[in-house]
Image 1 (cartoon, rainbow, N blue to C red):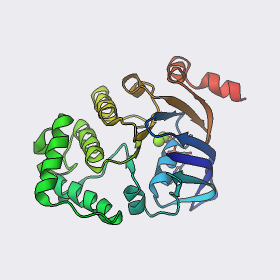
Image 2 (image 1 turned 120 degrees about the vertical axis):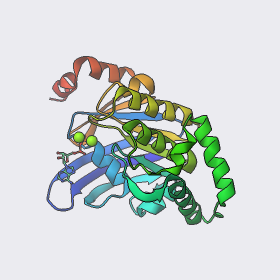
Image 3 (image 1 turned 45 degrees about the horizontal axis):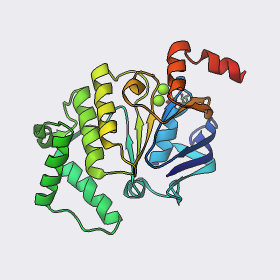
Image 4 (image 1 turned 90 degrees about the horizontal axis):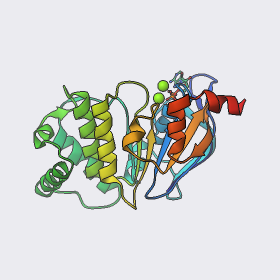
Length: 251
Ligand code: ADP
Ligand code: MG
Ligand code: MG
């Protein structure tokens, strides 16, 4: 589904290479995790996949179902079925959650040449999704993420995912900030949305998240490259020994 080949990325502003040849293949129905020391380029990979400004692809490519992702603008990527969740979701004062979700869904439908969803039908859809995910419908009435607790933001992100039904979900949950409860929410959301037609790429600094989401494949990124891949046991190895052993092996 997602295929990244020899991806090299540098900062647009300076001559600093960050990704130095990333190769990754994520099959439909699977959950892949990327772990790695701080500063290894994990977030940069998710930014580049999302089409964020400030990065320049100097070599390689990334495709979603054989379509060139890097050629698309961010809206087209979403319409193609890519969803990116970041650690710090934006707050949008004055825009109700429902309006936001419906606008996002309709933008996606429009880009696919599909008919827009009406207000009534949408309300039904969101209520249904919220119910399955045990999300309080009250949250739908509030402005997007404004004053939301960390846990509520996570719930909202999962709800967005459930409503937009992306095929490829990339979650960057790196660094600090995710407490145990928020981590469980993310894991529950991912597990609830696991499906044979959908794949997940979960980026995390910590093994803890993977206690709750059992990945099919774990990749270790060091200095802009994936240096090791394996099964869930690789995450446990990192938990036990840190990255020291892997770095020593490389050296
Ligand atoms: P990770 O998510 O693995 O911690 P990042 O992708 O955030 O790593 O960062 C990789 C490297 O690129 C780090 O050395 C970071 O300082 C640098 N970097 C990323 N984005 C920028 C930026 N916009 N400006 C300057 N340095 C950046
Ligand atoms: Mg970091
Ligand atoms: Mg990061």
